[in-house]
Length: 508
Image (cartoon, rainbow, N blue to C red):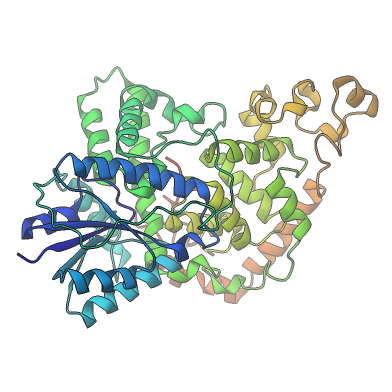
């Protein structure tokens, strides 16, 4: 019987795997993963992503081995590998999931589709999330999402394996792929078992902290679900998470109102997760250019390399910002409000374009999901045209979410002896007090790059001045019609989406 090829991408599991289930129903399968040097050479790729991938692949291979098979891993260009494999084992069908990734993966999938048509190989793609290919109308999108997550999760199918005619490749090192050597020592580890364990600990223990606990960088590491990297790599399916959460909600007594509220809010964020990925699916160019073209030129000609270098180095001079950069460096994770603040500081007082900032953050976030990432970068930078910009003051955010300075002192050791009165604005501290507390502003912690109030005011004037122009206002309607949420209504006067998430929600 002619075997089918199952091409794993960002769907590194056997449970609830539609492509694997469809292929197994036809007969023998060959399971393939391709490490693509071109993809890893991209500016949004990092060593931590590769390490997380390898951990997930090892576990996936072990799961297949327990069923008498294996995961064949190849290295190179996907089309070339398919060509060689097809010559030695003429498979009739290729199964994979629909991926909404960066432009490189998008162009790769188009090339695979052309190869399949040329060689008369059936090309079968299954939905990974509640995202619709060639979506013509947003009006029924929520109904589609609900239908997707309501379908029964697929059990692991009975598998019959075809022998692979190719020699297994030696896995390349991160150096060979051109990846930088940094790998956050405290990052989450990959694999299906970790994903399930994190889900269970959230549903049964941590969800009571979710409502009210996910904004502060102090409580968020345990209050947030921490499932976002496992969703991004497909170690667990969206449908599994939604159904497990709804099942938990249905069995909880009314007395557990705090946990019920947390899980209800979490389910809502799972909806928004797909809402944002749909934007990139429908508008792939938003990875590179302003969603609202009326904002072209807003920041493009004002690049300040000194500001960008200081941000990346955690030397902006605003303690909460620099502490967040250090936490990212150590953990590969940051909660949504601090992510939003980082982008806001970059976009407004530092007046940096979202694209280079986004590439840097893509490498920092272990849970980098292109569809969410680029939509949120633009939303926070004010270039979507349909969202009221949220401009965060990093000093106010520090007082609101780290009032006693525990977060800042943890991640910035030089600040540990500084009293609360000076902690968030150390540049105001007299020299004699700097000497007493062992911190020299401009050396142990940087001086602020700009005057925060003045720079933010100037940024607002530029943004809102452009936003008020008739041709820019007139362009909003088409963007709302194509990308706007239909959930919970919309203010038809302003075009603002009533249910739009206001902060970066890469994490959940």
